[in-house]
Length: 280
Image (cartoon, rainbow, N blue to C red; front, side, top):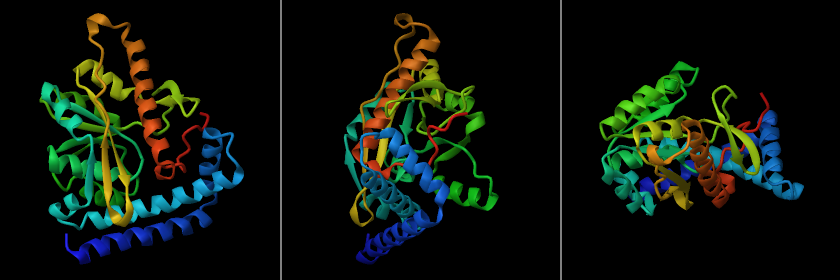
């Protein structure tokens, strides 16, 4: 990437952080949600620290949005120049079984960078996503996500598409950190609270035999990113496991534990404004 390209992308991040600060002042309801979530997760922290974390999380949100748009205009080689890797060998190892791979991530850091990174270095993925209600925005976001060959799977119809892709040894990706309705989820611990969480990754892993590979994209300084890969989580052999439902809960709890640990590594980079623990 040219020096001018680096500076332009970094500037987009700084402008985004400023926009996030502005949003923090204007979006009273989202600010209260973030503040309440932080208080639930860290009940022993002071008011000053919780307020500081909430404000910083909004700044990071703005930065991530602006940088995502900026990165969508960069050529592939320039995006690669922005990346550093942590335990990338875990991805290579996970794909050796030829069972496909379920990439598990969260609304953490620059999560939109996970898709292009995997596509550029390992090949395209099928990405589970909930569509935006505003059609022009949905088209724009989908174009960004599918730029390097990735494909979107609508969340309500995802299971069949995921199983088909995995049966062909391909990659699928899903985010696990958002709230789901009780009829859609299972309850597992998340930041010390029993939380309704999607069982879909566990169900698909058990049915397909594919490993779940946690990957998180952390924002660094000057518009750069660290792609951190965790060891793959293998489904238990069906002959040695308990009931299917018990295995789903156990695996989902494991995924939530790994995700929580990743968030604790960079607290301000998670989407605290999402109403994760709202009662239904």
